[in-house]
Amino acid sequence: MTSKSGSGAAGDGGYEYEEESVQNSRGMKLFTCRWLPPKGQIVKAHVFLCHGYAVECSVTMRGTGVRLAQAGYAVYGVDYEGHGKSEGLQGYIPSFDLLIADEMRPHPVVVSVLKLMTNIIPTWKIVPTTDVIDAAYRMQEKRDEIRNNPHCYQGKPRLKTAYELLKVSLNLENNVLSKVSLPFLIVHGGDDKVTDPSVSDLLYRSAVSQDKKLNLYPGMWHALTSGESPENIHTVFQDIIAWLDQRSSPKSSSSAAALDLSSEMEQKAKHDEQNIDKQ
Image (tube, rainbow, N blue to C red):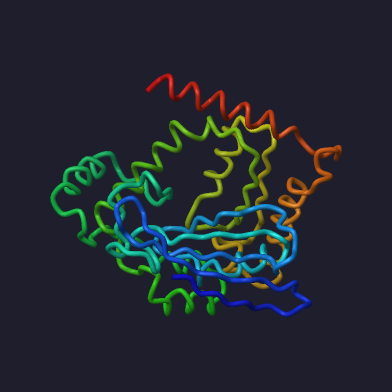
């Protein structure tokens, strides 16, 4: 079933909003949504939103979807299994093959205990954690919005979820970052207390991409595109949209600042081929 609604004044460029339920390989219904430029307007490119742990797309990331759609991009989001309006035990991640996050790095002894206990009581909500909402969002109205959103999980991380978060984080740091070859832009708040800016710096330094950029915003927190002041949010989106426009414009291939993206794809194919051969 699909529902549609549109919003946005003409001065904003307008946008179309749609929702739909799809079924994953395990037969679970997943909620999807999309923000599109007005009908008849040429779509510059397609953008896929990946929400963070315990939140969702349609409300939490609405501002991002609207701004990018008004800038000419088709934006798509999906609530992961166990998140938002999708089916599954809320806040429970049985496997992190489809999800990526960087939440914690406990002592090795704790890791061993976590691994053992996840086989016994995987859904228990017993992992201690600080209040991420207060640490991530500078503006009180956004904190209130998250806390009042019934589709955002606000309990303690479930044991299996915490272990999967840890496992994939270590794998990313040790095995993945140095293989990133596609163009990317990183935006990170200089005063982020949820994810250390050094993690973004590590990705920037480790990646083999020829087209890579790291924007560090002094004084800003974790939720750059939603939890900051309107002025700060505008600054961040200006940078994001400018980066996207440069790489989606038909003229970008002839621009002196443009890079040969085909070489990036060749690099990725080479890395993928090497990884397949090792398996």
